[in-house]
Length: 350
Image 1: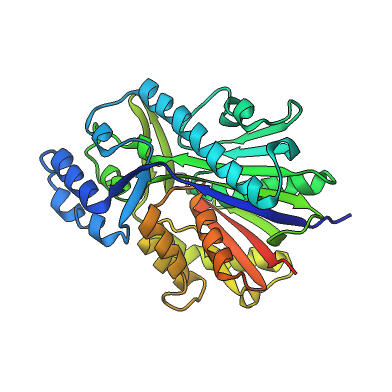
Image 2: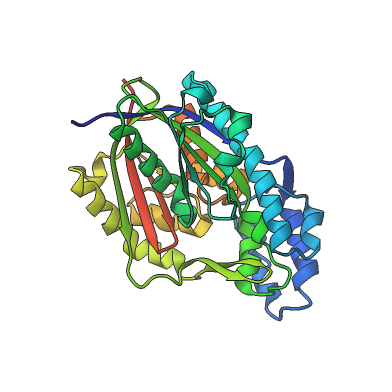
């Protein structure tokens, strides 16, 4: 029997430290200009990125010193735990529920390691029940907000009356590396920020919107487009310059195919809610989805205020779309390592 899964609550959280783009640019110049012949050609990315500021779990001064795995992961555990509690508490409050009402928690994160996982570390503070089901998910990267939402919705649908909490947390800034004077590291230092978002998914209890369809597509032979390397000092960014071109040429047909598989056409989508991976990626998405220039300006605004926070960023866009008033049908789209694309369609609650 088909069960309608509803989004009943959505909560956001960001760290207290704010890095303004001009300050990040000045720091990058001081750290890399003397070690990179091509730094002057890369420097304009800070002003051309469309980003004004970002939130980080550590102050700007922290990034001037070298840090190894132990320090980075300690900062990850502490920062991710705080953001989990803040985002989850806000989402549950909006849904009119408490942590005791949660039957299953899906935690999505790809920017740090913690065993036990973050939801176990904060279980006492949150006051989760001892019989809560835990589903930690690693490796989805920027696609994790949509893919995690899909996983959580399927778990909710499979358990009548279950309430599922999704929390996407990323501390991208902790991957910043002084030891890597490379183009991709400079680009990453201009784009990424930290944040978390939480969603409450329920069946048959009303809410903000209902999940209509889900879909994912994994492109073969694309492992080098996006991801992490695992090095002695920490994680290293993998981010291909060809990403905007890939989006322009390959994403449109795949989205159309996913929608068609669920009996939908692209023209039936009233609002696209896209992960803002970067200014050029948003331009490419508007072209790939045959949208007018400026259609994804909410995404650009989120990017300007928070940078690319990886998995939770698309949920920041969704929250903005909800505040503005969701249309009849929306489609959430995010791309991530693999290379992959995920899509969920939502119907506005009656």
